[in-house]
Image (tube, rainbow, N blue to C red; front, side, top):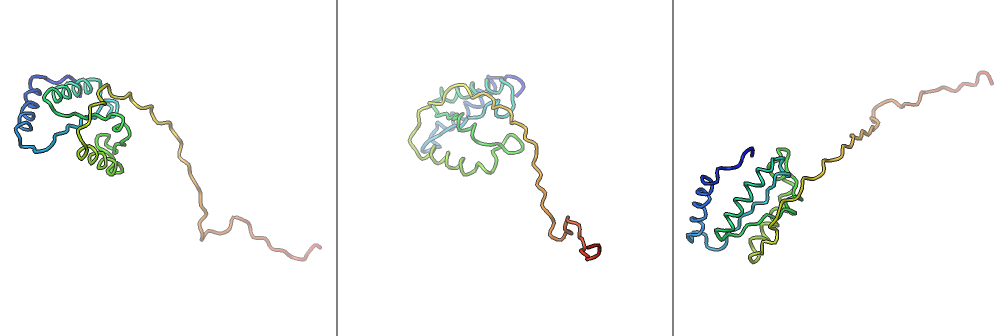
Length: 149
């Protein structure tokens, strides 16, 4: 996200979604999960500003919004730095089960996203040499003779 969104255009699109969801087509509960933040994805502050605007619109429309920034910080991204790593699938499934099957939660997680994590410390690779089983012994073969004794 390089620039602020055109709020009027995007607000109208979001409002269409809110109207649809508020029409009774959804029978139980609507939860918006909007936990992304710029530091997690390497985006600029504009991303956080745009997301906060959309979160505000969604809450003002009467819908539950979850950010759960601390939880999102725990979820490792895949190599593309956009999607969750498959190793996170169990934790993500557990999160959604708790979220959707429990009573409406108070939005205690409203606030700024966490800061960017410290860059990883470079650790040089460790190489371990293992001897080949079919390789000759590194000890030189010697012969013992009785000469010279």
